[in-house]
Image 1 (cartoon, rainbow, N blue to C red):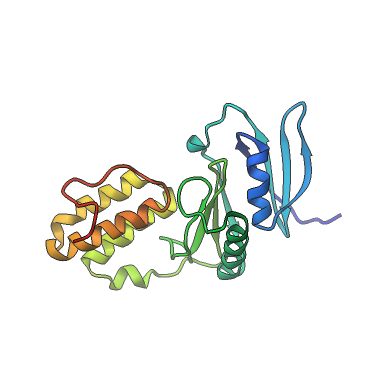
Image 2 (cartoon, rainbow, N blue to C red):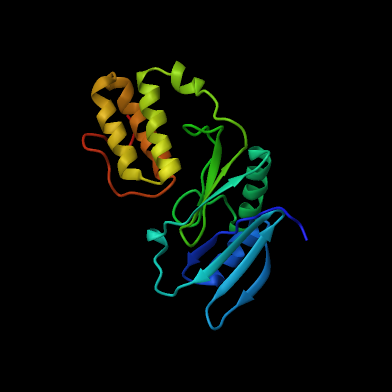
Length: 208
């Protein structure tokens, strides 16, 4: 028996049938499943283990499930996940549930990407090592910093209203002509994490 200590997260979902095909597309295999007395599922992919329990009344939009997954190579795992999702869904899901964000450097970390499963649970993929200095933020201009912070709100937290507030707060400090054209793009980048019907006050729905 291995002496290595392990932690296995147990995450909520509405139905196990929603979870299985999604994670199989990511390369996980089912190692155990039961329907009674309570729905329970065990999945494994290499050294990654995830367990799920089903609650029919559960609302995935309200899920607080979060898992940090530390991997040696973010790019390799992203490519493998993306290929599996495209094969299963015909395209890479980037909005709604489930979805996967594109890789980016995240504030205070070496970088990574996030996967949000059909149960609304976040898998936050990152790599080991100390946090790196964010040269992108240090060298960016005022507008670029606003866009970067807004995108982080959308990617890291899935909080589209907060991302829009960042954009609205930064708008008066930037040149109107340039900002108007880029602002909508930034909103669309943020809403990749979760669609929002709101268009910031004073902004056109289409860049001009």
